[in-house]
Length: 365
Image 1 (cartoon, one colour):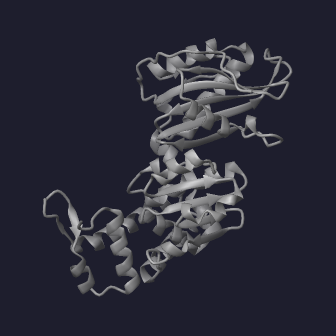
Image 2: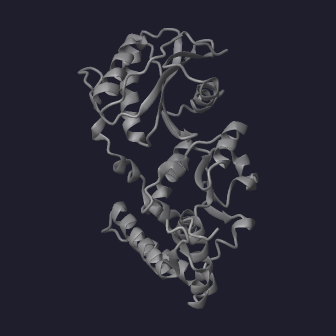
């Protein structure tokens, strides 16, 4: 049974770079019941059901996931879950989750803050102290507490969040096949990643958008998706994405992906309908070799590897530039396909540049 004890409905003006728009608490009691006990401000039933699905308390005999994050219809969710020790004031509660939703991607920022809120809830057993800290961060970007720790929102830069994953780890696992992921991202294809452990899925998926650093677009990331009709409908509205699943059944859902990554088995599969656009040639071999050589250089950091890949990407766009022209309305550059064909690139290279132009909305309508 799911209940709501009390909720507030007003929201203070956001300042200091703090983008959170919802805070709630979910408890699991000694009878095994999961209760949505508090939220600020009120939320929709659809979002509440989704967040209950994401927090691990509703699952029977499943492992505790200390922290999960993901995106649903341009709203990010961050959930920290803890086990309640016997010493806590929460005598009838075995576990609880602190849930934050926000407009920005920054797992480290929201993990740090929800950990502080968890310590407060363990000590006081009431949302009042949490609410004070939440409002302080919402309005000033800071909360200070000697016993629970201090938090400063501006300590958590968005670029740090973008660079927190490891490209080198991905290349270590997939080697030259990493170029398949790079190509899929360049062409704004749909990538689905499966692993039974959510932590592995999230670490891998959050890193992939860095392969196309020139876009710096993490809105394509959906790091924790269930095979739920509403979630899949929202996902399929996106033209290209990186989506993470822990349900092995997703491997049978070829309607959801152009590229399928079985992270558990270390396998990458291109869907039949995507093979024409994803045809590999000499250019892809060059890109793959650059990625591998850079990633295997022990002197280079992950950010330096990303920079190397980004420079190669810039080179690709430079190669495409001579075959573009100003559109008839003069608003943007579009591909001159005849000029591209006359250049007589190898078929796979011409095919890739054509589909890249399509991904960048450079085709004449």
